Every structure is written in structure tokens, then in C-alpha cells.
Amino acid sequence: MTNQLKTYPLKDWGLDIQNPLIIAGPCSVETAEQLDKTVEGLVKQGVKIIRAGVWKPRTRPNTFEGVGSIAFPWIQEAKEKYKVKFAVEVASPAHVEEALKNNIDLLWIGARSTANPFTVQDIADSLKGVDIPVLIKNPINPDLALWIGALERIHEAGITKIGAIHRGFSNFNDTHFRNSPMWQIPIEFKTRFPDIPLINDPSHICGKRALIPQVAQMALDLNFDGLMIESHFHPDAAWSDAEQQLRPEDLGLLLASLKTRQVFVDDPAFASQLQSIREQIDDTDREILELLSRRMGLVEKVGEYKKINNVAVFQIERWKKVFQTRPEWAIALNLNPEFVKELYKMIHTESIKKQTEVMERHLS
Image (cartoon, rainbow, N blue to C red; front, side, top):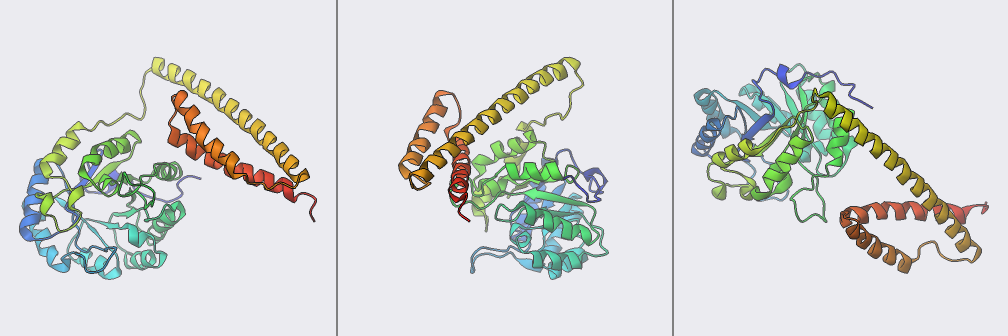
């Protein structure tokens, strides 16, 4: 399945967009002075589109939820003074109306809003007849269909300058990142919708500024179309998300260090060598699948033997042994043991399914 949505590429959005696209600015607009100093610093680093949190949907009550409408005069002043564009998050038709009234150049829909189809539909209805770029963050939970559905709702409202923001996913087990990147999900999104711009938000994935460079580079290595990064002239004094915001000058150093990759190289020798290696990968994949098929055949034999002897499908001691030894084997083979653990979880799930099917044969 590929993109069936009629959309405009970034270059036709009328925003003087860089390649890659860079959107940067404070998590929250706090004061006129804070916004002015931050934008001044960002402009010096070549940033042309400023993100500005006017309304902040928070997880818990009694936390800072944005200054609201009083931010718009400060935004207008910064737009005129520094000749930049502004992007604002909207979570309701009232937000859309106010943002449009105040000449905001780009809107984005946050992760909490994307997770609620009713909210997205309300926003979509308020955008009918409007020509403005809209970016849609992935929902908090790893649900690709929900993310795609949000884009479809906005597109059906007539918005054709539309893009997606990957900001990571809530994951109870992941302590390294604030939100797990789960790169396979944006990769699948890009596979299905190759023409829709995909932006990475390393700030919300990382939660800590020290981790931002590696995630930002990973996104560019995966051919993302740009980055949205939080920046504050004095991050440690920020009213929200202080630990993940960069000073403008540090953002400049980060951007200078990032490497963009070419999608294609017009070099016959390179293409020939790459094709040769890929053919070897194809052959190896076929061997892997043949071995998996052989393994599943053995699993069925085990299931038949268990059935004859009235033994339960799931054997905890056997599973503990497999789960312990396979990662050890992986290390000896220079493979990531965590990857192998996840692989064997899937193999074990399929094995249980196969043996259960064997147990249920001829029961009816």
C-alpha cells in the first residue's frame, strides 16, 4: 500500500523551507522577553521556522499549560522583527480559529490529540476551506493505523500541505528515552506514504538534551525530511521540558555536525557492488526462512508427541533455557542479544500457536 493522498511536497508549501527542514523554538512561550531572546538566537543559527507552544496539553493537572492567547502579540512582534515563520500546536477548533486569526504560518496536532479521533475530526472540520500546512504527530501509543487515520481526516478536510511528525511512543519498559523511537513504525509509515513529508522530533523522543544528536542523526540517516527541535535561550529556567531544550548556540553546533545522506549515487561501480551484496542478502534470507520452516516442522513433531502423552504445550523450564542460551549464543556470533531476545519471543509465540493447533486437531 502506498500513498493515495493528494499532497504537495515541502518545496511548494510557500515557507522558504530548508533541506532538511528545521523547525526550532521553545517548548512553551513564557514571556515576551523569553520569546524574543530565543528567536534572536535561532535566527543567528539560520532557523527560519519557529515552533512556539501557546497551549500545552499536560498529562497531569496543576502543571503549566501555556500562557494562551496573550502569546500572539509577542509572536507577531517576533515575526515582524526577525522575518521568520511560526508554527503552533492546536488541540481544538478554538485554537485553530485563534491561530488563523493571528496569521500563524503552520499548525501541528500533538500526540495526545492524534490519539483521539473525535478531537482530530473536530480540528479537521474547523480547517475546511483553509490553505495552511498541517503537521500531525504520532499518537502516544504505537498505533500506526491511528496515525494514518488522523492524516486522512485532515486531508479529507481539504488540507493538501500535510506532513507527519515522529516524536516517539510511550513505552513502560524503555528507560533510556523519554519516548521510545520504535523506528520500525515511521519506516513503515514512509513505506506506505513516500510522498508525505516525515519530520523527526528528537526532543520528545530523548527527554534529555545529551541524547538529541544521536537521534537527530539517525533520523537523517533514515531519510527523514527534517527535524523539530526544542530550543530556549536559558533552558534550565524553562517553565516546561527544561531538560530537553537546547540553547540556540548549541542547536547551531548540532545542526553543523549533522550529516545528510544522498538517496542515490550516480556511480556504476557503486551500484554494481551494492547489487552484488544485496543478492547475497537475498540468498541468506532464503536460507534463514528455510531454517525457520524446518524449525516449525520440528515444533509440530514436538506438539504431536506432547499430545500423545497428554503433556501441556507450554513448558516453562524449556522456555527459560531457550531464553537464556540464545542471547548467549548471539554474543558469541557478534549479534545484539536484545535483538535475539525479541526475535525468539516471536518465534516462541508462533511455536506455541503451532503446538496448540496440533493439540486441537480432530477434537470436533
